[in-house]
Length: 288
Ligand SMILES: Cc1cc2nc3c(=O)[nH]c(=O)nc-3n(C[C@H](O)[C@H](O)[C@H](O)COP(=O)(O)OP(=O)(O)OC[C@H]3O[C@@H](n4cnc5c(N)ncnc54)[C@H](O)[C@@H]3O)c2cc1C
Image (cartoon, rainbow, N blue to C red; front, side, top):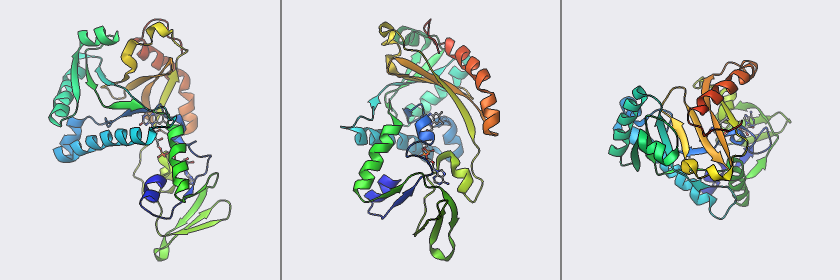
């Protein structure tokens, strides 16, 4: 937001209660996919073809924009293929419907039957959609790149500065910081990620917790396995995986968020669940 607003010539002040980039951005497993959690064929039923297709197209444009921003930086941006897999026959039927919708929307996708996935990637699923446009990035470094160039345009950044109160009366926004300082502005943008629930006046969010783990390094001889593809599955809740250097990050099994203590109590159970779910598409001897 700071980057876009300053590029548009606005006078911007950024306040963050933490060190910069240490919110959920630092936790992200960083699969860059244009896919929205709701499959395109279902999104079309809810919002109509034009809006749904546009939502997917915007995802592609976002990946291209991140690629552009990352040129000449150490943000770790790489294009990767993305595999959307069906583990059972029922999921494969819905996945085929999704493939038809994506092809109809002009997206660069290929249908892979079970044998093709086994031959090219070495694991057993019923079918997969392979998307050409996807990638990975280091989100923390990307954030620092965006903030550095924002500062060069004059954005004033105050980290470890918590917004305690927002008053929007009289056509002016007055922000009171926990430190006792005030910022007066014409507009305020709540770019507060999952913590938006704390400051937004209306309840428009329902939060989920996700769980992720990373493997020990894997022998380089199996590194070509998966073609470094991003993998996620047609399921609800779903699992996802990608390479990070010579390790595999694997996650998913999201549950509704109640509170941090209840979430943390689930970690042991979720670790076992993830290991079991990963085993289905794993090479032997991947240790987490
Ligand atoms: C485990 C995990 C895995 C994920 N994996 C992926 C993935 O593979 N691909 C993907 O695309 N997305 C993924 N995501 C989602 C992605 O990380 C987030 O959508 C994204 O980082 C949100 O960025 P943000 O800047 O909106 O929020 P944040 O990075 O959370 O930034 C919001 C900032 O607001 C600040 N803030 C909040 N309240 C206040 C306040 N009152 N005063 C001052 N500052 C405040 C916080 O300190 C924080 O720095 C994942 C998320 C998690 C948690």
